[in-house]
Amino acid sequence: MSSLYLDRKNLGIKLDGQALALYEDGIRKGSVPLHLLERIVLRGNAQLESRVLGALAERNIGLVILSGRNTEATAMLAGGSHGDGVRRLGQYRTSIEDGLRIPLARRLVLIKVRSQHRLLKQALAARADLRYPLTGAATTLNGIRAQLREDRQAPSLSTLRGLEGAAAAAYFAAFTRLFAPELNFTGRNKRPPPDPVNACLSLGYTLLHYDAVRACHIVGLDTMLGFYHDLSFGRESLACDLMEPLRPVMDGWVWQLFRERELRAEHFSHDKGRCVMNKTGRQRFYAFYETRAGSARRLLRRYGYALARRYRSVYEARP
Image 1 (tube, rainbow, N blue to C red):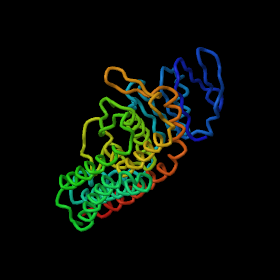
Image 2 (cartoon, helix red, strand yellow):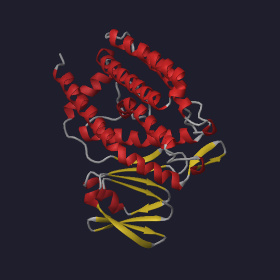
Image 3 (tube, one colour):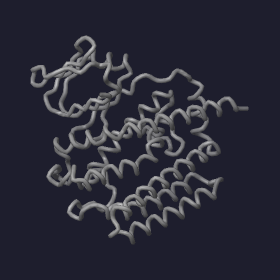
Image 4 (cartoon, rainbow, N blue to C red):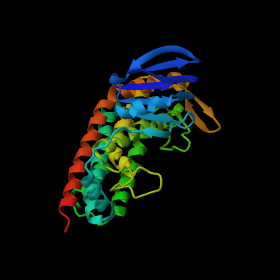
C-alpha cells in the first residue's frame, strides 16, 4: 500500500505507536502501519488527533483533504522539501523573465498537444464509427504541433496560449463524442460539474494536482511560481504547469471508466445543478486511479527534477 483513501462519515483517526488507528462512531475498525503509506486522501467528516499530523509530516507522508461537495482540495500536507535554495533563486528569476519562461512554456504546450493527439488516435482504434470527427481533430492537432515545432522562438506567451486554446477546442469537440449521449457531456465545465464525466474529470484533476504539488515540494520548488501559468493569488501555478501534459492521460482514464462500465449513471446524482458521485462511484474511481497513478507520479517527479536542474543552471549563469 502507498495510498490510503478514507471516504466516510464519523471517522476518527488517531496515532497508535507506528500506526494509524481508525475509528467509526467511536468504535475501532482497524489500523494501518505508517511505513506502508506515502499519501492519504481524506473525504468526509473526520476528526484527527494533532499527533497524527505531526507523525505524517515527520515521515513525509502527504495528506490531501477533499471537500465533500465539490471534490476540490481544501487542505494539503505535502511532506518534506528539498533543502537546496539555489533552485528557488533560479525559479524566481525564470518566473519574471519571458526569455527564460517561453522556451519552457513552448515545450509544455507541445507535450500536451502531443498527448491529446495520442489519445484521439487510441480512440480511433476503438471507435471506427467516429472516424470523421476524431480524424478531423487529430489533423488539427497535428497542424498545431507542426507550428510549435517550427516556431522555436515563440513570440509571446499569449501566442502559446492561443495555440493551446485552439488545440483544446478541437480536442474536446472530438473527445465529447466518445461518451454516451445520456451522460450529457458536451464540454469541460467544472464550476460546478453538471454531468458525470465532468464530475470525474474534476475529481481526477484534483488528485493529479495534489500529486503535482507533492512533486514540487519533493524537489524544493515554490509551487506558486510557474513558467506557463502566471502568478495568481492562491493558485499553485507551478503545480498547474506540471500537470498540464498529464490532463489528456486523465481524460483517457475517465473514458476507460465509462467505456468499461466501471462507472455508470447510477453512480451519480444531481443536486441543484451539480452532478455528485456517490460513495460506490468514488470507491471505484479511487481504486482505478491508484492502479494507474504510479506512472503519472513518476513522470511528475521527473518533470520536477528536470526543472530543478534547469533553475539551478539559470542561477549559476546569472551575470
